[in-house]
Amino acid sequence: MKRILDTVHGYIMVDDQYITHIIDTTLFQRLRRIEQTSIRAVYPCARHDRFIHSLGVFHIGSMIVERLKNIKENTWGVDDGKLENMFVSYLCACLLHDIGHAPFSHTFEEYYGQKTELGEQLCSIVNSKEFRDDYDCTIKSEEPNFHEFMSAIIAFEKFGGGLNSIHANPELVVRMITGIYYNVNKKEHQIDNCLISLLHGNVIDADRLDYACRDVWASGYSTSCIDLKRLISALHIKKNVKEEFVVCFESNSINEINGVLNVKDFQNKYVINHHSVCYEQWLLRNAVIYMAKKFFNEESSGEMTVMNKIFNKDSILNKTEVAGKYTICNISDDDIIFLLKQCDDNCFYKEWASRQYTRYPLWKSKDEFLHFFKLDPDTDFKHNRFRDEIKKVIEEKKEITDVIVLTAEFKPRVCLKSLYLVVSDDIVRYTDIYKNSVDDNKNITFYYVYVSKREQSRGDWEKERGGLISDLQDVIKNLYN
Amino acid sequence: MIIEIDSTEIIAYLIRKKEFKNKIEIKFQEIRDMANKIEGFDNDFLVTSDYLSIDAFRCAFSQYVKASEEKIVIQNSLEIRKRIERMQPAKQILNYLDKE
Image (cartoon, rainbow over the protein chains, first blue to last red):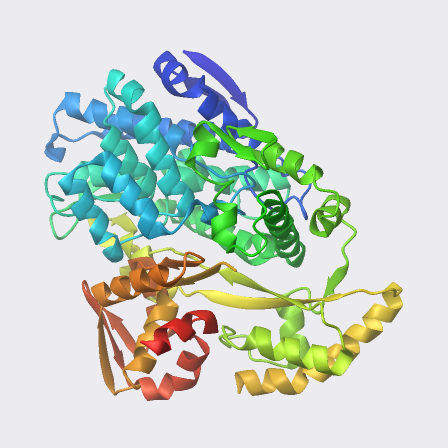
């Protein structure tokens, strides 16, 4: 048993089997050099990484397993040996859920490739008809994210032997990482499905609970505080009205559940979609695209073609050669910075590295946007012509050609219908009590417009900003009337 | 340039293709097939097609849309035509789709 001290959870106790087969490996240690979030542009203290997050998820997973062992009911219909194997699989999945994460949080993960290709790869390595059939049913649930596909592929391929040796089920681990539930044979796998939802759920799971606590602690911003012990002590697995086992929480823990939802809401609205965070991510992404096109001598190739040469399974597991002279091994944030430094004429990198931004946002928040254009706050801003129309007006009227329009999208991806409460011994859906929450999964789209500062003082560009906003009044009205 | 879309844009496209009829039924499989088709046009197109993104569309038009296990049903889509038009996929994707 090892004790690992964590500033968020205190001591994390880890059995030797997890240390030997998962934690003390090059692939898991790689996560020390992958940042957890992209928010350091605004919160410089947020230097936490995917390594400590994975351990934190394991810690919360251990608390959940302890709780389930304490409340275990014979009616679950799973024998003790099998249940123990499920718990070991769950804890392994907690550790491995980000093992395939790309550098710089989520900035580059889509360059792993299209989901159809990644799904095909995963199905072929798991090589089970039941798994493939269940994967085909993800249209009825939640499709894995890019890094989840990659994590599952690596967990199965590289950790499969170790998982078998500690009596974990590699296929179940893959399902827990990706959220691919047993669907075809769901009756026989109800408890497996409950455990999948406790790592990859739509509302409360170990992953979400750790980042909700850790991101708040590391960044220092003030939002809801979550009492994990209180929440987990209210956890049950019970039969719902359809006689299916589901994860549920005692209704008196509703305050903690709302706390988790509030943190995610706050992060999406004010942190992840902050104008500086969006701009820095745009800069970093363009810096790497520029560097990759240059080094691979593929100026005219598509973005995916050239970026996938850097962000792929091989660069995580083995080596990737760049420009015939640099070798990347077990790719992490450091490698990307190193490669960027080898390219002298990369203006995106220079701007990102110096933080001497050459553009300013016309509005810094949705509130400013609403105020400037006198729009109804409930307006649906998603508009496929927004970018072109705005650029046209600014370019024509002000002869500013370097206009950047970035989309800030808040996709809640929560399904509160799947959250069950225990109310006076009845198992009821959260949405049966809080009826309006059934519509809480609405995507919210917003746009930032950045224009070049040119050789101006702050006062000058503030004045110019006022002029540009006046020029945009008509076009915004036309777009949203 | 990478373009990411999800089921919300695909549904908006299918409603427009079905000419804003009074009652439009779209099977989830139709959305998945369209997602696969779009990804096949260009590897810079990335599509998410799952229940959560379908549900996001339902939430945006909760008075007009009902979702069941296999399909969504959109009623009186003419009344939401303007918003549906705004939600169409990016023109790079439409160029391919409209050629079909």
